[in-house]
Length: 54
Image (cartoon, rainbow, N blue to C red; front, side):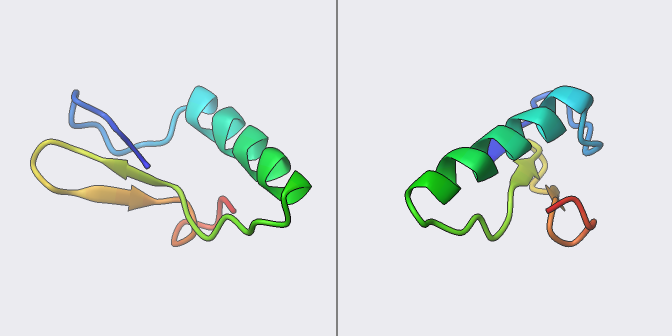
């Protein structure tokens, strides 16, 4: 999970690339990444899993 202080919920190319790196690193330790969330200051969130990016 990370925040977007700007309030924008769209996942950037950098967000997607970081998620892919996290998934690869987690596999080395037999850990499953279930989701990656972007949180905004007003409490909204973007779920990579819900949007088919995992």
